[in-house]
Image (tube, helix red, strand yellow):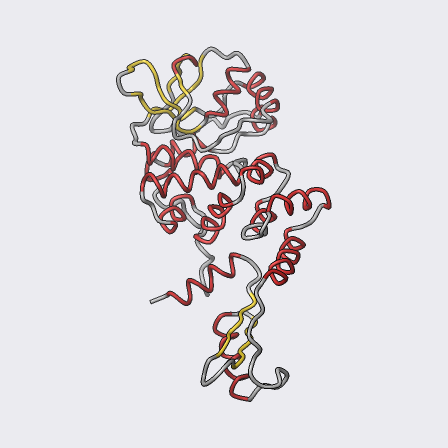
Amino acid sequence: MSLPPKPRGLGRGLSALLGDDEVAAAVAPAPTAMQAKAPLPTARPVPARAPLTLPIGQLKAGRMQPRATFDDMDALVDSVKEFGLLQPILVRPIGGQGDSYEIVAGERRWRAAQKAQLHEVPIVVRNMGDQDALQLGLIENLQRSDLTAIDEALGYRRLSDEFKQTQEDISKTVGKSRPHVANTVRLLDLPGAVQDMIRRGDLSAGQARALIGLPDPLVMAQRAIDEKLTARDLERLGGELKSKTRSPQPKARGDGGSKSADTKALEKRIEEALGLKADLKLRGLGEQSLLTLEIRDFDQLDTVVERLTRR
């Protein structure tokens, strides 16, 4: 009897850097109102490192914060006013400023605490470098599922550009698949106006990925919003647009309708190996051939590339 699949971990993420108790304290999802009012168990284990409390003015926004916008905070502010700050803010000391700390995880909660006019907030202090601070900021926001795809992409790019991490390294750290990381970073190839649409929530990441490589993605993005087009609609329209602008291909050899048994057998082998629809045609002189693979999205493309480049 096979064992159930093991949940995907966070690689060298929170547990490795903080310890399990502090992970639970620093980045656990906020309790609901009913949970906050429920009585605490009589024998509750105490974390190995209990949070401190500091004046809110001694904390500063993090330089490695992946989030660029802090909108829709009214519900959080109301919760902080009623129940206080239920999770500590993860901070690191600022060099040369003994009484100041930089926020690593929890900046949104800190901003809400300011609006709720709290004077002190609970914190957990850890010494860490910029790379770990950026990784932890990404992980916290991704676990809460409220980071925009563009902010997520910018965080991945910083890990790649500033700390020379590969997409495989990043995927292990944040607990996402490598194709997800690659597809998210591709969003940064879109014009700034389209990226703003993604940040505002006018376009989903799936819709935006379908715009990559189109001659005028901004026009198509606006059309998607106006006509309420799905990602699948955009993929279809994009394919039609590319086929119209593609240069004419040399005519295939033969009558174009019949294929030999050998050619059909090769197509079948390719389809079984890659899991994609394949079309093999003989062209020109000699043994020159054209192989066409029908690839639906970037996830399939990444899978094909990975299989073809595997050693």
